Length: 373
Ligand SMILES: C[S@@+](CC[C@H](N)C(=O)[O-])C[C@H]1O[C@@H](n2cnc3c(N)ncnc32)[C@H](O)[C@@H]1O
Image (cartoon, protein in one colour):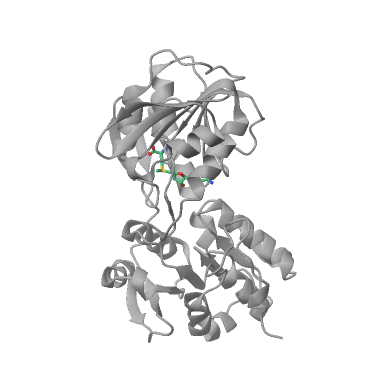
Protein backbone atom coordinates (compact mmCIF):
# COMPACT_ATOMS: atom_id res chain seq x y z
CA UNK A 1 0.00 0.00 0.00
CA UNK A 2 1.38 3.41 -0.87
CA UNK A 3 1.67 6.18 1.70
CA UNK A 4 -1.70 7.91 2.32
CA UNK A 5 -0.69 11.52 1.58
CA UNK A 6 -4.36 12.54 1.71
CA UNK A 7 -4.45 11.72 5.42
CA UNK A 8 -1.98 14.52 6.25
CA UNK A 9 -3.35 17.70 7.83
CA UNK A 10 -1.84 21.12 8.63
CA UNK A 11 -3.65 21.56 11.93
CA UNK A 12 -2.90 23.19 14.38
CA UNK A 13 -1.56 25.44 11.61
CA UNK A 14 -4.08 27.30 9.50
CA UNK A 15 -6.20 25.07 7.23
CA UNK A 16 -8.05 26.50 4.28
CA UNK A 17 -8.69 26.38 0.56
CA UNK A 18 -5.39 26.31 -1.34
CA UNK A 19 -3.38 25.56 1.81
CA UNK A 20 -1.92 22.08 1.56
CA UNK A 21 -0.11 19.72 3.94
CA UNK A 22 1.99 18.19 1.16
CA UNK A 23 3.06 19.81 -2.10
CA UNK A 24 4.82 19.05 -5.37
CA UNK A 25 8.25 19.82 -3.88
CA UNK A 26 7.72 17.23 -1.12
CA UNK A 27 6.75 14.65 -3.72
CA UNK A 28 9.75 15.45 -5.93
CA UNK A 29 12.16 15.18 -2.97
CA UNK A 30 10.64 11.80 -2.12
CA UNK A 31 10.80 10.54 -5.70
CA UNK A 32 14.38 11.73 -6.28
CA UNK A 33 15.55 10.15 -3.01
CA UNK A 34 13.65 6.87 -3.35
CA UNK A 35 16.56 4.63 -4.28
CA UNK A 36 18.96 6.24 -1.77
CA UNK A 37 16.34 5.88 0.95
CA UNK A 38 15.98 2.23 0.01
CA UNK A 39 19.63 1.70 1.02
CA UNK A 40 19.19 3.32 4.46
CA UNK A 41 19.10 1.42 7.69
CA UNK A 42 16.98 2.25 10.74
CA UNK A 43 17.70 5.78 12.04
CA UNK A 44 19.89 6.76 9.09
CA UNK A 45 17.29 9.04 7.56
CA UNK A 46 16.63 12.63 8.63
CA UNK A 47 14.04 15.18 7.49
CA UNK A 48 14.64 18.90 8.14
CA UNK A 49 12.19 21.73 7.56
CA UNK A 50 9.58 19.07 6.91
CA UNK A 51 6.53 21.34 6.95
CA UNK A 52 3.80 18.91 8.09
CA UNK A 53 5.72 15.64 8.03
CA UNK A 54 5.26 14.42 4.45
CA UNK A 55 8.99 13.71 4.01
CA UNK A 56 9.59 11.94 7.31
CA UNK A 57 6.33 10.01 7.37
CA UNK A 58 6.39 8.81 3.76
CA UNK A 59 10.01 7.71 4.29
CA UNK A 60 9.17 5.88 7.50
CA UNK A 61 6.24 4.22 5.74
CA UNK A 62 8.20 3.17 2.63
CA UNK A 63 11.21 1.80 4.45
CA UNK A 64 9.68 0.64 7.72
CA UNK A 65 12.39 2.80 9.32
CA UNK A 66 12.78 5.15 12.24
CA UNK A 67 13.26 8.73 10.97
CA UNK A 68 14.56 11.82 12.78
CA UNK A 69 12.70 15.02 11.99
CA UNK A 70 13.11 18.71 12.82
CA UNK A 71 10.69 21.52 12.03
CA UNK A 72 11.38 25.03 13.30
CA UNK A 73 7.74 26.12 13.66
CA UNK A 74 5.99 24.67 16.70
CA UNK A 75 2.69 24.43 14.81
CA UNK A 76 4.44 22.38 12.12
CA UNK A 77 6.12 20.16 14.70
CA UNK A 78 2.74 19.52 16.33
CA UNK A 79 1.18 18.78 12.95
CA UNK A 80 3.93 16.21 12.29
CA UNK A 81 3.24 14.48 15.62
CA UNK A 82 -0.52 14.49 14.93
CA UNK A 83 -0.02 13.23 11.36
CA UNK A 84 2.27 10.46 12.61
CA UNK A 85 -0.52 9.30 14.93
CA UNK A 86 -3.07 9.57 12.12
CA UNK A 87 -1.09 7.23 9.85
CA UNK A 88 0.02 4.91 12.67
CA UNK A 89 3.72 5.87 12.59
CA UNK A 90 4.19 7.56 15.98
CA UNK A 91 6.78 5.01 17.06
CA UNK A 92 8.86 5.58 13.92
CA UNK A 93 9.29 9.33 14.29
CA UNK A 94 11.87 10.97 16.58
CA UNK A 95 11.13 14.69 16.79
CA UNK A 96 14.22 16.83 17.46
CA UNK A 97 13.01 20.12 18.90
CA UNK A 98 16.44 21.72 18.50
CA UNK A 99 18.43 21.28 15.32
CA UNK A 100 21.87 20.17 16.44
CA UNK A 101 24.60 17.62 15.84
CA UNK A 102 22.46 14.82 17.31
CA UNK A 103 19.76 15.50 14.72
CA UNK A 104 22.01 14.53 11.81
CA UNK A 105 24.70 12.35 13.44
CA UNK A 106 25.50 9.36 11.22
CA UNK A 107 22.71 10.21 8.76
CA UNK A 108 23.07 8.74 5.27
CA UNK A 109 20.14 10.52 3.65
CA UNK A 110 18.89 13.97 4.62
CA UNK A 111 15.67 15.29 3.10
CA UNK A 112 15.51 19.06 3.35
CA UNK A 113 12.93 21.68 2.49
CA UNK A 114 15.13 24.61 1.54
CA UNK A 115 14.85 27.47 4.04
CA UNK A 116 14.29 30.95 2.67
CA UNK A 117 17.44 32.37 4.22
CA UNK A 118 20.82 31.49 2.71
CA UNK A 119 22.43 31.86 6.14
CA UNK A 120 20.01 29.29 7.54
CA UNK A 121 20.86 26.96 4.63
CA UNK A 122 24.58 27.52 5.33
CA UNK A 123 24.07 26.51 8.98
CA UNK A 124 22.10 23.39 8.07
CA UNK A 125 24.58 22.35 5.35
CA UNK A 126 27.55 22.91 7.67
CA UNK A 127 25.87 20.92 10.43
CA UNK A 128 25.16 17.99 8.10
CA UNK A 129 28.72 18.06 6.74
CA UNK A 130 30.08 18.05 10.29
CA UNK A 131 28.00 15.23 11.74
CA UNK A 132 26.41 13.02 9.05
CA UNK A 133 28.00 9.89 7.59
CA UNK A 134 30.75 10.46 4.97
CA UNK A 135 28.48 8.96 2.30
CA UNK A 136 25.49 11.17 3.19
CA UNK A 137 23.35 12.45 0.33
CA UNK A 138 21.24 15.56 0.86
CA UNK A 139 18.04 16.07 -1.16
CA UNK A 140 17.24 19.75 -0.75
CA UNK A 141 14.12 20.87 -2.56
CA UNK A 142 11.57 23.57 -2.82
CA UNK A 143 9.28 25.57 -5.05
CA UNK A 144 11.32 27.18 -7.82
CA UNK A 145 9.92 30.64 -7.01
CA UNK A 146 11.54 30.38 -3.57
CA UNK A 147 14.89 29.04 -4.85
CA UNK A 148 17.96 30.86 -6.12
CA UNK A 149 21.24 29.96 -7.83
CA UNK A 150 23.00 31.05 -4.64
CA UNK A 151 21.54 28.02 -2.83
CA UNK A 152 23.60 25.71 -5.04
CA UNK A 153 26.71 27.74 -4.20
CA UNK A 154 25.98 27.57 -0.46
CA UNK A 155 25.65 23.77 -0.63
CA UNK A 156 28.89 23.78 -2.64
CA UNK A 157 30.70 25.32 0.35
CA UNK A 158 30.20 22.03 2.23
CA UNK A 159 29.69 19.35 -0.45
CA UNK A 160 32.01 18.28 -3.27
CA UNK A 161 29.18 17.60 -5.65
CA UNK A 162 25.83 19.39 -6.07
CA UNK A 163 23.48 18.27 -8.84
CA UNK A 164 20.28 20.01 -9.86
CA UNK A 165 17.35 17.81 -10.85
CA UNK A 166 14.90 18.52 -13.63
CA UNK A 167 11.98 20.75 -12.68
CA UNK A 168 8.59 19.20 -12.02
CA UNK A 169 5.42 21.06 -11.17
CA UNK A 170 7.39 24.26 -10.45
CA UNK A 171 9.67 22.43 -8.02
CA UNK A 172 13.29 21.37 -8.08
CA UNK A 173 15.75 19.41 -5.93
CA UNK A 174 19.45 20.03 -5.28
CA UNK A 175 21.32 16.79 -4.59
CA UNK A 176 24.51 17.21 -2.54
CA UNK A 177 27.14 14.62 -1.65
CA UNK A 178 30.76 14.48 -0.51
CA UNK A 179 30.64 16.46 2.76
CA UNK A 180 33.64 18.55 3.80
CA UNK A 181 34.50 21.51 6.06
CA UNK A 182 31.55 20.87 8.37
CA UNK A 183 30.91 23.25 11.23
CA UNK A 184 28.32 23.88 13.91
CA UNK A 185 26.10 26.98 13.56
CA UNK A 186 27.46 30.16 15.15
CA UNK A 187 25.09 32.87 16.32
CA UNK A 188 25.55 36.41 15.05
CA UNK A 189 26.34 38.81 17.88
CA UNK A 190 25.58 42.49 18.46
CA UNK A 191 25.78 44.80 21.44
CA UNK A 192 22.60 46.86 21.63
CA UNK A 193 21.94 49.33 24.42
CA UNK A 194 23.46 47.15 27.16
CA UNK A 195 22.20 43.87 25.71
CA UNK A 196 24.43 41.24 24.11
CA UNK A 197 22.08 40.02 21.43
CA UNK A 198 22.62 36.63 19.80
CA UNK A 199 20.82 35.50 16.68
CA UNK A 200 21.17 32.17 14.92
CA UNK A 201 20.30 32.23 11.22
CA UNK A 202 16.57 31.96 10.70
CA UNK A 203 15.75 34.13 13.72
CA UNK A 204 13.78 37.29 12.93
CA UNK A 205 16.32 40.09 12.43
CA UNK A 206 19.30 37.89 13.37
CA UNK A 207 21.15 39.71 16.14
CA UNK A 208 19.94 43.12 14.95
CA UNK A 209 17.54 45.38 16.80
CA UNK A 210 14.42 45.76 14.69
CA UNK A 211 13.50 49.41 14.00
CA UNK A 212 10.00 48.84 15.38
CA UNK A 213 11.39 47.20 18.50
CA UNK A 214 13.76 50.15 18.96
CA UNK A 215 10.77 52.50 18.89
CA UNK A 216 8.92 50.32 21.43
CA UNK A 217 11.88 50.22 23.84
CA UNK A 218 12.25 54.00 23.64
CA UNK A 219 8.65 54.41 24.86
CA UNK A 220 8.68 52.01 27.81
CA UNK A 221 8.46 54.07 31.02
CA UNK A 222 10.87 53.57 33.91
CA UNK A 223 8.07 52.35 36.19
CA UNK A 224 6.11 49.38 34.90
CA UNK A 225 3.47 47.22 36.61
CA UNK A 226 4.47 43.68 37.66
CA UNK A 227 7.90 42.17 37.06
CA UNK A 228 7.95 39.97 40.18
CA UNK A 229 8.60 36.20 40.29
CA UNK A 230 4.86 35.55 40.49
CA UNK A 231 3.93 38.19 37.92
CA UNK A 232 6.82 38.34 35.46
CA UNK A 233 6.79 40.64 32.46
CA UNK A 234 5.87 38.59 29.44
CA UNK A 235 7.73 39.14 26.16
CA UNK A 236 5.43 37.50 23.66
CA UNK A 237 6.96 36.40 20.32
CA UNK A 238 10.44 37.23 21.64
CA UNK A 239 12.58 36.45 18.56
CA UNK A 240 16.23 36.97 19.56
CA UNK A 241 15.05 37.94 23.05
CA UNK A 242 16.18 41.54 22.94
CA UNK A 243 13.10 43.04 24.66
CA UNK A 244 13.21 40.65 27.63
CA UNK A 245 16.97 41.03 28.02
CA UNK A 246 16.68 44.83 27.82
CA UNK A 247 13.97 44.87 30.50
CA UNK A 248 16.01 42.60 32.76
CA UNK A 249 19.14 44.74 32.34
CA UNK A 250 17.27 47.94 33.06
CA UNK A 251 15.51 46.48 36.12
CA UNK A 252 18.03 44.34 38.02
CA UNK A 253 15.37 42.81 40.31
CA UNK A 254 12.79 42.06 37.64
CA UNK A 255 11.69 38.72 36.27
CA UNK A 256 10.72 38.12 32.65
CA UNK A 257 9.15 35.22 30.76
CA UNK A 258 9.91 35.24 27.02
CA UNK A 259 8.38 32.94 24.44
CA UNK A 260 8.49 32.21 20.73
CA UNK A 261 7.09 29.39 18.62
CA UNK A 262 10.29 29.15 16.55
CA UNK A 263 12.92 26.67 17.77
CA UNK A 264 15.80 28.78 16.48
CA UNK A 265 14.34 31.95 18.03
CA UNK A 266 14.09 30.24 21.43
CA UNK A 267 17.70 29.06 21.02
CA UNK A 268 18.83 32.59 20.13
CA UNK A 269 16.88 34.18 23.00
CA UNK A 270 18.46 31.78 25.50
CA UNK A 271 21.90 32.66 24.10
CA UNK A 272 21.04 36.37 24.41
CA UNK A 273 20.06 35.96 28.09
CA UNK A 274 23.26 34.04 28.86
CA UNK A 275 25.48 36.54 27.02
CA UNK A 276 23.74 39.46 28.76
CA UNK A 277 24.03 37.81 32.18
CA UNK A 278 20.27 37.71 32.87
CA UNK A 279 19.54 34.03 32.25
CA UNK A 280 18.68 33.56 35.94
CA UNK A 281 15.82 36.08 35.66
CA UNK A 282 14.55 35.59 32.13
CA UNK A 283 12.91 32.29 31.41
CA UNK A 284 12.70 31.47 27.68
CA UNK A 285 10.25 28.89 26.37
CA UNK A 286 9.17 27.69 22.96
CA UNK A 287 5.42 28.13 22.97
CA UNK A 288 2.45 29.04 20.84
CA UNK A 289 1.42 32.49 22.07
CA UNK A 290 1.18 32.45 25.89
CA UNK A 291 0.13 28.83 26.33
CA UNK A 292 1.09 27.69 29.79
CA UNK A 293 0.40 31.12 31.34
CA UNK A 294 -2.71 31.32 33.54
CA UNK A 295 -5.72 33.49 32.66
CA UNK A 296 -5.77 36.99 34.18
CA UNK A 297 -2.30 36.56 35.70
CA UNK A 298 -0.03 39.16 34.06
CA UNK A 299 0.37 42.90 34.53
CA UNK A 300 2.50 43.62 31.46
CA UNK A 301 3.05 42.04 28.06
CA UNK A 302 5.28 43.33 25.25
CA UNK A 303 4.72 42.32 21.64
CA UNK A 304 6.13 43.01 18.20
CA UNK A 305 3.83 40.70 16.22
CA UNK A 306 4.83 38.91 13.02
CA UNK A 307 3.05 39.52 9.79
CA UNK A 308 4.65 36.75 7.73
CA UNK A 309 4.03 33.04 8.03
CA UNK A 310 6.70 31.25 6.02
CA UNK A 311 6.51 32.71 2.52
CA UNK A 312 2.81 33.54 2.84
CA UNK A 313 1.61 36.86 4.18
CA UNK A 314 -1.04 36.26 6.76
CA UNK A 315 -3.01 38.59 8.94
CA UNK A 316 -4.20 35.81 11.20
CA UNK A 317 -1.27 35.49 13.56
CA UNK A 318 -1.39 38.93 15.17
CA UNK A 319 -5.07 38.65 16.21
CA UNK A 320 -4.30 35.21 17.68
CA UNK A 321 -1.52 36.77 19.76
CA UNK A 322 -3.69 39.75 20.79
CA UNK A 323 -6.47 37.40 21.92
CA UNK A 324 -4.09 35.30 24.00
CA UNK A 325 -2.55 38.43 25.52
CA UNK A 326 -6.09 39.51 26.48
CA UNK A 327 -6.69 36.12 28.11
CA UNK A 328 -3.51 36.32 30.18
CA UNK A 329 -3.65 39.99 31.21
CA UNK A 330 -5.26 40.78 34.53
CA UNK A 331 -7.82 43.61 34.53
CA UNK A 332 -6.02 46.92 33.83
CA UNK A 333 -2.93 44.96 32.78
CA UNK A 334 -1.14 46.47 29.77
CA UNK A 335 -0.19 45.15 26.35
CA UNK A 336 2.61 47.25 24.82
CA UNK A 337 2.66 46.59 21.13
CA UNK A 338 4.56 47.89 18.10
CA UNK A 339 3.25 47.25 14.61
CA UNK A 340 3.73 48.31 11.02
CA UNK A 341 1.50 51.35 10.72
CA UNK A 342 -0.17 50.28 7.43
CA UNK A 343 -1.48 47.14 9.17
CA UNK A 344 -3.83 49.31 11.24
CA UNK A 345 -4.07 46.96 14.22
CA UNK A 346 -5.66 49.51 16.53
CA UNK A 347 -9.22 48.31 15.89
CA UNK A 348 -8.27 44.68 16.58
CA UNK A 349 -6.46 45.69 19.78
CA UNK A 350 -9.48 47.71 20.97
CA UNK A 351 -11.83 44.84 20.23
CA UNK A 352 -9.73 41.96 21.55
CA UNK A 353 -7.87 43.57 24.48
CA UNK A 354 -9.38 46.90 25.51
CA UNK A 355 -8.94 50.68 25.28
CA UNK A 356 -5.86 51.39 23.15
CA UNK A 357 -3.86 54.60 23.00
CA UNK A 358 -1.09 55.48 20.60
CA UNK A 359 2.15 56.44 22.36
CA UNK A 360 4.42 56.89 19.35
CA UNK A 361 4.37 56.77 15.61
CA UNK A 362 7.05 57.16 12.95
CA UNK A 363 6.71 56.74 9.19
CA UNK A 364 6.79 52.95 9.53
CA UNK A 365 5.73 51.93 13.01
CA UNK A 366 3.10 52.64 15.63
CA UNK A 367 3.46 51.89 19.35
CA UNK A 368 0.27 51.39 21.33
CA UNK A 369 -0.70 50.50 24.88
CA UNK A 370 -3.88 48.49 25.31
CA UNK A 371 -5.38 48.25 28.79
CA UNK A 372 -7.30 45.08 29.59
CA UNK A 373 -10.89 45.98 30.25
C1 LIG B 1 8.45 40.56 14.37
S1 LIG B 1 9.21 39.22 15.22
C2 LIG B 1 9.60 40.02 16.75
C3 LIG B 1 10.76 39.39 17.46
C4 LIG B 1 11.28 40.18 18.67
N1 LIG B 1 10.27 40.36 19.68
C5 LIG B 1 11.87 41.50 18.25
O1 LIG B 1 11.26 42.50 18.61
O2 LIG B 1 12.88 41.52 17.56
C6 LIG B 1 7.83 38.20 15.57
C7 LIG B 1 8.12 36.85 16.22
O3 LIG B 1 6.86 36.20 16.43
C8 LIG B 1 7.10 34.82 16.48
N2 LIG B 1 5.81 34.11 16.41
C9 LIG B 1 5.04 33.90 15.32
N3 LIG B 1 3.92 33.21 15.65
C10 LIG B 1 3.99 32.98 16.99
C11 LIG B 1 3.16 32.30 17.91
N4 LIG B 1 2.01 31.73 17.52
N5 LIG B 1 3.55 32.22 19.20
C12 LIG B 1 4.72 32.78 19.60
N6 LIG B 1 5.56 33.44 18.77
C13 LIG B 1 5.20 33.54 17.47
C14 LIG B 1 8.03 34.64 15.29
O4 LIG B 1 8.71 33.40 15.36
C15 LIG B 1 8.94 35.86 15.42
O5 LIG B 1 10.12 35.54 16.14
